Amino acid sequence: MRHKIEKQDERLDVLGSLVLAYSVTIDRLVRRMRNAGIIPDFRDIHEQVRRHMHMHIR
Image 1: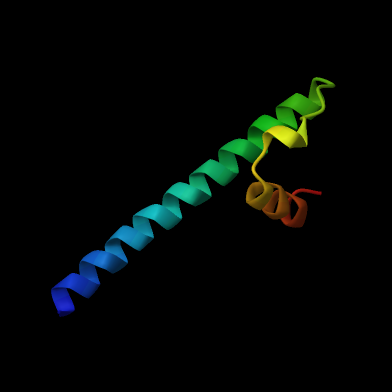
Image 2: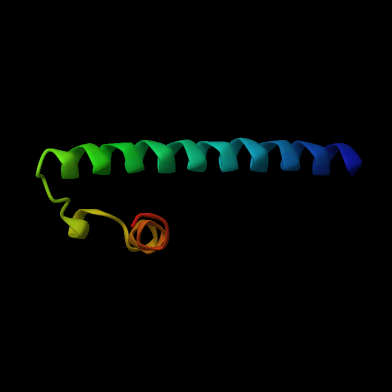
């Protein structure tokens, strides 16, 4: 049982790191777009991501 929990924790760590990497990448891309005068169309972004961006990108 302990081994199974450790493996699950490892997977959660990997997924958490991946989500963070996506978040950083999207932040960079959105900033580049804005610097180029391109306004992102938020209808193309999933609602959950929009909520996250609204909280963290100002």
